Length: 67
Picture (tube, rainbow, N blue to C red):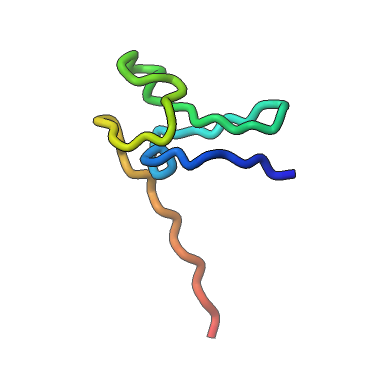
């Protein structure tokens, strides 16, 4: 069974997000920025609609299509 999780807002597109699953099947959104900057909560309330520390995560390139 794949764990489901609520939308995390900006965190879903942020470089500093790490998804942390637990043994009961829940998945939590951890803000890695909280490790070095105490102003950021470790597990922010979701959905995050604005965040001064937001940095877009790199978008993986789309796979090439064969003709």
